[in-house]
Amino acid sequence: MQIAATLTAPLLRPASARATVTRLSQRLPGSARDPDSKGRSLVIAIARDPSGAPLATTALTGPEPYQTTPSLIAWGALHTAALGATLPAGVHGPIAAFGLDTLRHGATESGLHEADDPPG
Image 1 (cartoon, rainbow, N blue to C red):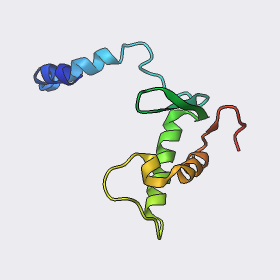
Image 2 (image 1 turned 60 degrees about the horizontal axis):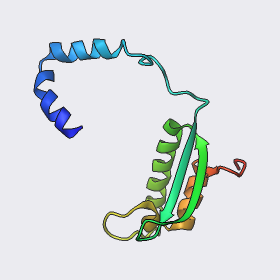
Image 3 (image 1 turned 120 degrees about the vertical axis):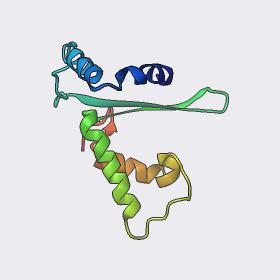
Image 4 (image 1 turned 30 degrees about the vertical axis):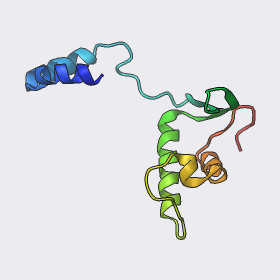
């Protein structure tokens, strides 16, 4: 992607070229589609040991991704800003930053639940 973007960037500098690409993209199948409100998220996670062998697998389901993603981001921001929240310095993944139990609670608040369990 980076190479393609680097090579095509000079071609798209003129406004006329960008307008042409926009017109062409509007003719692509599905270009007028809005996110499907009946869509669902499916998240599958596999924990692996250092050699790559699977240790555990889980599947979560929830609202469509365009609803789930901002909900998770908002939860993380609110949790981080909460009085008394202590997070480790630096950049960490969500489990390292919040802890598994807290992250599980945040995912539930955002509408995610284990695929075998009913929403609640």
